[in-house]
Length: 287
Image (cartoon, rainbow, N blue to C red):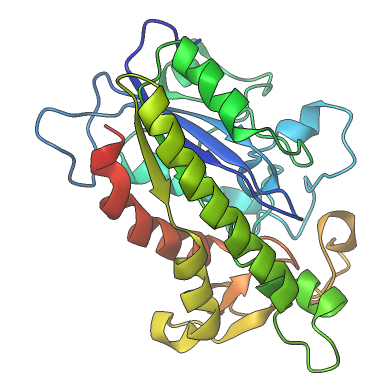
């Protein structure tokens, strides 16, 4: 699919609650709302990954993890539960919008897709799709012509509500053991990126730090106009996700005051702030 197109990739792997994301930015035509290097335009985006950027792919396959029911999608146009694991737009939607590509990135298996939708990008991401080795993935991407690759770091997974509930003890703190593992993975990941940069001729690999931006949001919610960073908006906010977050679950009144929508996944408001911090910092390396 990418063969013959100049592209940049963002790759992401998450430990414990696999939140993988691999984005292909295709550089031909279009108009971006964010400032790009002179002469660069990104009109199409193709995404691969897990539940954080599942745009509704699991609606069309036999999958255990689904969310195509209320209250998911409450803040999408018409309050439509599209299969996104959030109250609104995912990070991929927001990135595509900021780059002037489209407002919502559809899932590849959507039966209503038109040719024009394919031209501007789709998502292959599926909740529960799991983990793939970095070296193998990047080797395959390199083999089809990819030369600019950004790799997302692990996030502070010990601080998501479900991990606090399961591993945070009576005080419901961040599960530091899980966070330490995430930091160890990030150190190894950075080393692997350095190694691949030296062994793959002509490739530009970029390590994209998500750990510290998200941790800062969680530890200093007021700085970003959030009021709640320890529990999700849906139900008790401590364990509910997928089928446990449903039309019978109460939700918080102000969605944009919560960092997490359910016990694993961020709200649209959180996604927006993360994209605002990351995209301007790294986009020049991916175009």
